[in-house]
Length: 303
Ligand SMILES: NC(=O)c1ccc[n+]([C@@H]2O[C@H](COP(=O)([O-])OP(=O)(O)OC[C@H]3O[C@@H](n4cnc5c(N)ncnc54)[C@H](OP(=O)(O)O)[C@@H]3O)[C@@H](O)[C@H]2O)c1
Image 1 (tube, rainbow, N blue to C red):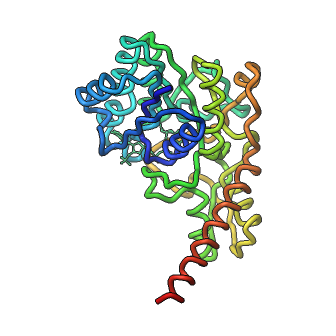
Image 2 (image 1 turned 120 degrees about the horizontal axis):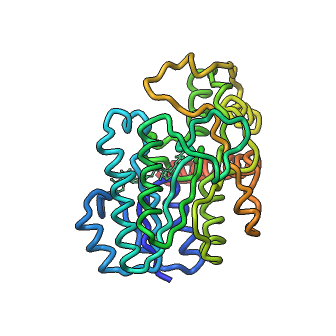
Image 3 (image 1 turned 120 degrees about the vertical axis):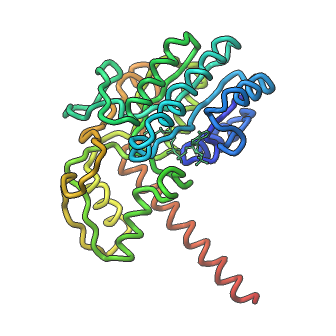
């Protein structure tokens, strides 16, 4: 089966690309350089040229502050472009799988959000992602909208200067020995590889609709940082803060935990707990850095 994938060099896109290929899918991998999502003419040409059975859109303009200061671009990339792709998909009978965000919610809840909860974004990024979802639904194309949250992965998050939260914490601990992290924002940190693996299950059963997919369990960013430091035995002083300590022009949901109950009710396997995914990720990070050290030593010896 042929799949066209946007954002293929992104944090999520790279894991999806690798997992799809391992599972025998033919992937037409598009980066921003290959085609800007807003370049509708080129996008149309590419879709017509390759005629995939499935189009997966992981590309987005998702730097939250940048979206706030350039709302025109946010709506163009996160709403209008997916809507155009959806209309193309409808016309050509292609299934569209589109990634959306926990930021469609206002974060005032204190229990995990289900797909039936009403969305009420607090910022331009969330508004533009929600509009993208609604325009996809209105196109009547066969679609699966997957809302995810708090992503981190082996590959760099391109919108966040290449460092995910885990790497940032380890870097700050090493450089400063003291890190201040908020206790009043609750999330479900989710590894991109766990989503990529679940996507294969959705493809196998041709799931459609709007769904939530995130790690099991939830924590504050401070608890997440604590687990990172404890698991890696990192010497650091972890201080508690609240979001008001870091004033920002952009409102963010203080509670953005997604409920996976719907996919479980359809018989899909359970997502891993956030701690289990984090441990796997940190083990991998550790073995990669050990391999790099061996390579550096070998290179030094052969010089
Ligand atoms: N990261 C999170 O915590 C998080 C949370 C909830 C939802 N999401 C959603 O998950 C999806 C994947 O995010 P990610 O973490 O993988 O982010 P990422 O690493 O920043 O990847 C995004 C990709 O989109 C590409 N892109 C951006 N603007 C584009 C445009 N105009 N045309 C074509 N490609 C463009 C980027 O390429 P360039 O870098 O070259 O521009 C990059 O390859 C997004 O839809 C995002 O909204 C992410």
